[in-house]
Length: 463
Image (tube, rainbow, N blue to C red; front, side, top):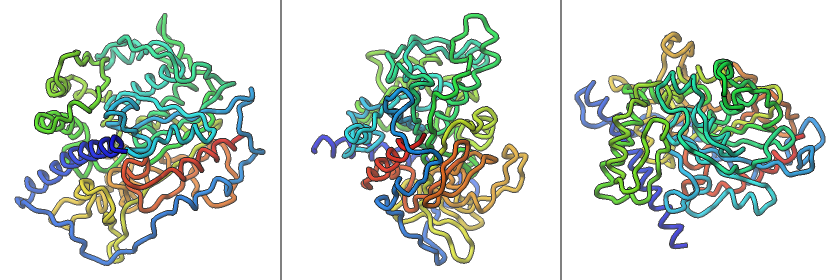
């Protein structure tokens, strides 16, 4: 128990540092543009307060699957679940064993396994692009040596092969041994990109002699379902409201963490950024500070082959052109909302329970201050890859827009209602009100175990 408390305390300390760095970026914008040193987040109008969703009321038994329920694959084996983390995520052995999926007190992987649902957790590059992460995820699940592809690697100027070799979480993976993929935040984009590679491959890569088999495509049936959790499937307007852009922000956050590590000692519990493809290996005796400063000078940041770009609306829409919805896969979007709606303006105000460092990022500031995610609009579609940002983008969970979580813009998306039929190729969106970006994976004090048990039960019923 003491170890769990220590892990949780360390993680919350790191999250606070991350949030502090994000908040400082917002404060700097306000000070620069309006010569003010404070920005009040005091609520100015009455709001509509929706009750927090009860996870124990979420029941897989209320879903009616098109075909008769089946808990196993065609060959009689149970279909496993694979978790994939988001931006700045971490593996099971990092942060002194703190679990990304469950936090300091729960371990969702082991809980699901103990209840009869085979479950694995991946650990892809925390700041890498979804393309690179999807490649890594493939080899982590299937096994083998990572090959990012010659054409892709040459285009962005990083290494094609870096010696990453995995035994495979589930080596038997194929169309007769499919899997369920679950991704949180950017992890949802990653698993969608992996599905695109499995089914389509890469035309340019497979035109090169000696290419890796992943680029051949033609792997339909390997994925039974996709579940995205708090995923900005069409990007986040956070980049627009920050002004400096997400790419610069992520870089600055990483460097800020390193600088703070000098006095906090958190370098002893942080993780490897896993970007060896950019020549950023961490030497055995290298300090975390030196390592991250080296990363800060990497040419990665001048490319569009990194995670922060994929989270922007422009980057996400480009990703969506490739990672289209497959007619052969079940899709679920678990959406989070941690804001209350203003009765007069319709602006979205952060709930008091929202992770505190996120509040300044999304708060709907009134003119003359720059708006936050909760009230930002932009009718210039050409500036946002054809997307008009209007009031439907205001609701959020502290980092991502709830609207964007519902599925890629243009996909067939329906709100879940009890006893509805579940069909492949359609996104089923479920709203979890009162949960912020960290709550929904158990990284705060909220217990989300019932949600994951019930969702695993639902997945096991898919034919």
